[in-house]
Length: 80
Image (cartoon, rainbow, N blue to C red; front, side, top):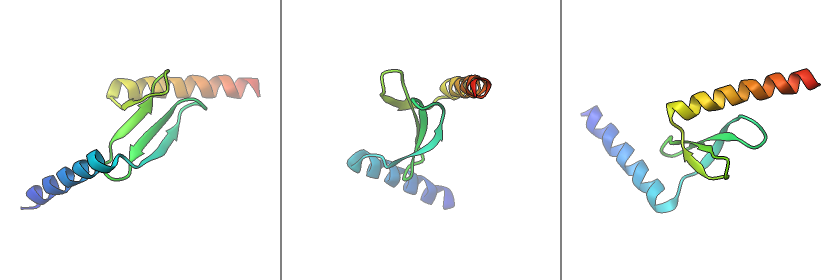
């Protein structure tokens, strides 16, 4: 019975976001231009593209963001 309630809550959260839009908060700053976002209602994870659009965060994009984060930190720390 808990599985059924869990699916109902997930479906209701998804419907809320589809009607009213996602409530996004910044989960992590990758660089000053790229960030990872998470919806506080349905827990959807998003990231920026080079064009400034927000797209779903896939495992591949998560790996790309991690590499970009490490590169940015190494470069920034060596300059300062």
